[in-house]
Image (cartoon, rainbow, N blue to C red):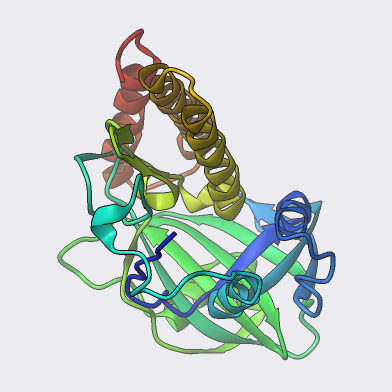
Length: 298
């Protein structure tokens, strides 16, 4: 096995649901894998125009992406880059967004992320999700009085409001945050799928195969399940099962999962008081559902 590493991950925090945290610990066979991560207990959702939203149980863990990668890497034992020439690889497992084959994207939305300080007295175990006209905002406490503020919107010729201005314009998040840092560079976060996601000698996984809107709140969980599916597919092929059938089943499973995700997104975005520009995003997702749901459409 040989791993080719891409650019370092952008510095940001992620939220792992309780189920995803358990899956990670089980796959890495380490019950203490996420020990010390910041606990989240509830989520407040203000999706319409009401000044307050529903508070729901949402146990999970928040931690820095780099920290998560380092924790996982400590459990890997791999040969050096020079030991396994790329040309000798039986299969290439590709995780890169822009690499093998065309990527079909269902929308054009991006995410901006900023580090903010929580106000004194603000709950550090409550994450907050709120719709705004330009999209939606998500506040994730990260421990030590800090939090990550995420803003999902559609890029345009004008810059988005500053993190401080966006926070001040919200209905609920503004009560929890004080000083806000600058936005990161915008990160593409539209749902997408590689068509096809596999072929003879190669197989795409993670965001190299498909991606989910962060509104799902379980992107890492989707990636983990996709990796398990990919490993099972390669094991079946190595065991002598029909390769074309295995790759076809892999593709169909990914596309069914994304079609269901798009249906969920449509229900949420249609129900939010969004600006007219979001109509194109909604149409793009509707097209995606039709494409992925057609017999043989993938």
